[in-house]
Image (cartoon, rainbow, N blue to C red; front, side, top):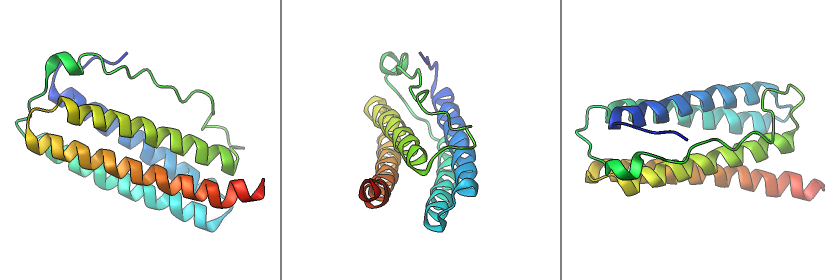
Length: 151
């Protein structure tokens, strides 16, 4: 379980996770045979890059959090079912893994918004959660249109 001691640790964690996802989506974009899927992963990667910059700017805020709420965010990671390092990762598995990642990040940013005392931080985390939800929806639409139809 991840324990945070202060706001900067929260932001560092979020930035690290976004950087991991930039690498993840960049890797997937390069491995996908379908051009539209490669473009989708590439565009998500660019959105993640923008998000890192926004998180970096948040370090300047004098944010306040309910320290009892953020002590244990219950972030153990539950993406082990699919090995994203596998070079033979199927299109379907890539989409499933992407949806799971976006869902976990949505929950993280939602929890951060709930714990934020500062309105500007709360608003920023709500916006970040909404962006994660939109990204998950993009993957769900792709899954529904191409995977479910093929099966």
